[in-house]
Image: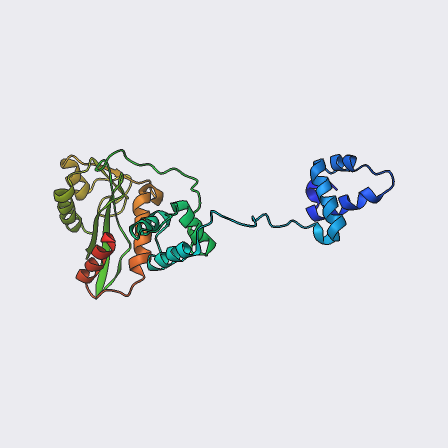
Length: 280
């Protein structure tokens, strides 16, 4: 049977048994089993000292880890994570710095601590390398991403969170509890944002109401109004939410932090919750 189809444990057991045969050459056996001579002699020594119990792989964990984070800092990291369950290594590191923790661990070290204590959700790819590249515009107000998040119960009606993010800085320019998704509602909140932050060069939106009814018919009263202000309007590809990736990511955190709380009785209560969360 080819080597690739045989278990490593079976190959090791066969290898350590063959040198006892008359005329056997250990170096020739190493070549036959496609291992180096030092590796072959290592397994023979283990077998001579421990028998079959010495053949399985041993842990490669070092006997000591002098640079490992001290337990007190690990507990501080876990305590902060419990207070902010959606925060990762970079944000938690800022809190540790504010508390004067020394030595201050790197963000990657904090992520490793969270992973070691099962604080990361593998289903969300938390702490894992990304297989794609995110675009980022070179300066603030070059592009705003804007969308409505799926609504939440609000008294007899629903709260529709309107989110506006600056693409370059990811700053939350707007997080507004709206009673509907109509043009007049969005336009009023955009005027407030323009007065405070200035006009963007372009806004990126999806193809839904009120910024688009269909990819073939992207012009709506809202998009025409924006163009008249000198603001270009771009639409995401149909069924490709990753085009609005920063805003979608923002929605995910908003859902985990605010959406799982008890429903608010009115829009004012939702807005107060949004304002506190946005500041934090």
